[in-house]
Length: 176
View 1 (cartoon, helix red, strand yellow):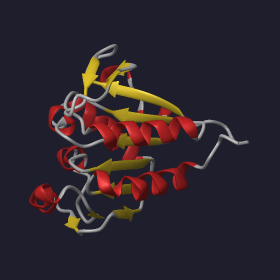
View 2: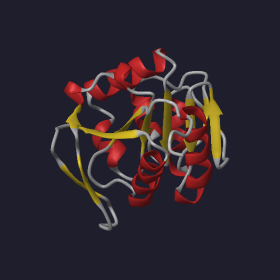
View 3: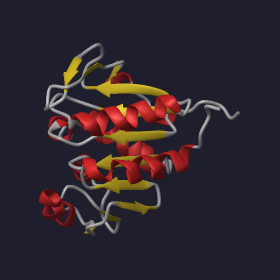
View 4: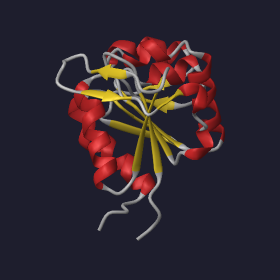
């Protein structure tokens, strides 16, 4: 059994319920420590469909990208609440520089675009933000999952199985 890895979830209100719940549950099931990071610690965060809520473990100002083996960014409207925050941008920039896996689904790549991480990268997202991807220098492709170096991206809740599989492939399974 390998050592459990810490996985950060960047989250704010109005996240896509299943895009948080399913990856989160799978990370825990596979023996990883899931840490929810938002703008503030101990914040109650509600999904846009209202089926689930989470409490943040820490605020972004306390978070250190080097502590995490992967960062997962669920979609919905959550990324739009986080993308303009300079601490969030610095967190994903440091993770990207270190080659840390960053898995973003649906609207999640908006955070990567705001942080200036898409130039020359190939990725996918919710099709409605493909123009934002292109404007940020990324190459948008319409596929269930795209891996470009340390970035794992997917489009919608229907793509979650492939998204979760690719993310776990990078982390390994610790639960036996």
